[in-house]
Length: 419
Ligand SMILES: Cc1cc2nc3c(=O)[nH]c(=O)nc-3n(C[C@H](O)[C@H](O)[C@H](O)COP(=O)(O)OP(=O)(O)OC[C@H]3O[C@@H](n4cnc5c(N)ncnc54)[C@H](O)[C@@H]3O)c2cc1C
Image (cartoon, rainbow, N blue to C red):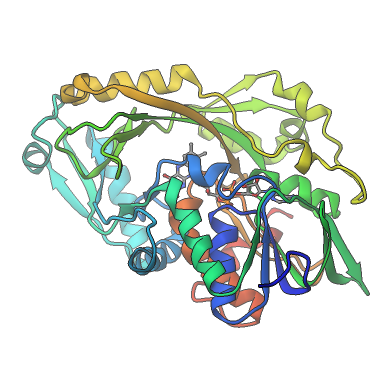
């Protein structure tokens, strides 16, 4: 078995779904790969999300990634337990405006290959007999599904290991070394690893990691909040997006519940540094994301923006971001779900949690080579929807690093769009 500090062709910073999926595709292609995670696999966003694997309502350039991901999730599930099921997704409509908005999205998205159908009020009564609300209709996709965040990354990492990748947990990457301008090694807290290529898949930490290398990546964090019920049969297996609640069945028998508006954008020093890039999305999304002053301002002010690799870095100082849930946001989702589906009045909340979502100004990820530093790649900023497309992103990034043509056009995701 390879030693954690053996030279590799590709070193990956971060063991979330993006890092693990890329390691899998690289190792499968026979590329010597090592992944380093400062905490444990998927300890941040990738284990804390809702588990949606969706095509509906995606930004258009992401639709081909979502379609490819549907195939890859199915194949993964045949090899290892990732908790994937194709159970369909409903975007509920309360009025004509909702219906028009959905129709506008679909008109544009179908040219990218998206498939959806539109259900009438009558269809909804048949499909959701336990609903107490009269939905005017819904946009529905039977090809959407869910996977279990607590199983998926571990499952994919196990396949990557089987294919020959080295996966190292509790080992932060402090920085990189260059030789003649290009990447030559990473420096971890356990020592140096020769590497011709480095992928930064560090989730909410990617801005800090890249900034220390002189690469500006406009990324902030938004606090999302979620709850799960104890096992309970609400006779509902399809996933649902209502305006003020979301709900999906889990493999443990419970339901994961949240809402898009359960998100908080806490003001931190980076909020001011990046104000000119984020002010428009903050205003446009003010109904969903609430901007707040918080004690995190002081905590983040203390984090150095430049640091050497020969002593402890912020990545070791904080092994895992584990924020508390935003109680008001999830209480509201829970109340609205039970008003809409009274059957949930018999359910019990088993657990609630928070998670920092890494966001970019246009809510689309950066996926590509960082041309200022040959050999350095970035796949980050998934803005709350990277789990579902994770397996496809890993395949594309692996192809890119190997010098092959990625199966999906990555041009819309280049970092240069923010210049
Ligand atoms: C509440 C919530 C709900 C969401 N719901 C959905 C959903 O339903 N569907 C969907 O598609 N997406 C959803 N998302 C978004 C999705 O979870 C993320 O887009 C995706 O998990 C990002 O994966 P990642 O690998 O980029 O980042 P992460 O999962 O955050 O992984 C990055 C990893 O890098 C590690 N790391 C950072 N710096 C270093 C370093 N220097 N050295 C070593 N390791 C390092 C971190 O510890 C972390 O484990 C949601 C997110 C949240 C928080």
